[in-house]
Length: 202
Image (tube, helix red, strand yellow):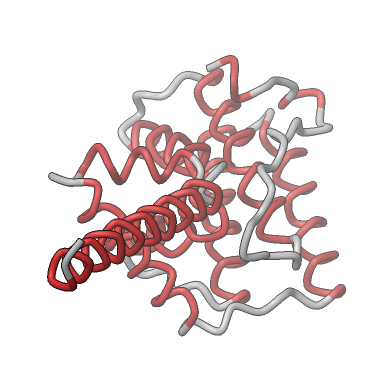
């Protein structure tokens, strides 16, 4: 084998090794994004032309999230918010429509105190997806029902489901254990008789 041939073989081997390493890195990065964003990974993928574009969007969300300065609630604030939620549960029977509106405002109040911007709904979803991607569909469903309720097109059962959906994100926001790799939260079941039910049944 000539020196020139040996050189080309060495180059070919190096290229193959580099491609293998790049493939492994890409696969690990993709797996990390899937773990972090959960269903939001597939949702973003379905809304973009290519997987690369979708993954760049998710990494952009991570970078933006890192600048927000999200902070935990104080024990006193957490206790106060829980008391406010309990009050909402109690008033739901007599005023389900207004109560759902108040639940939405309460969830946004918790977001704001933790450091999440609350001005634009799509931006809220983008920011929340970094830590709450596995349960963010509950918030979407709650807001959809709230919109119908504002037009008097939501049944009492719809409104009950909205409360249960809001409760899922509400409980996660009260938790101060936001991690790089959050675990999926169980769907919350309200302990008030009027709100018994599981959002996964809807």
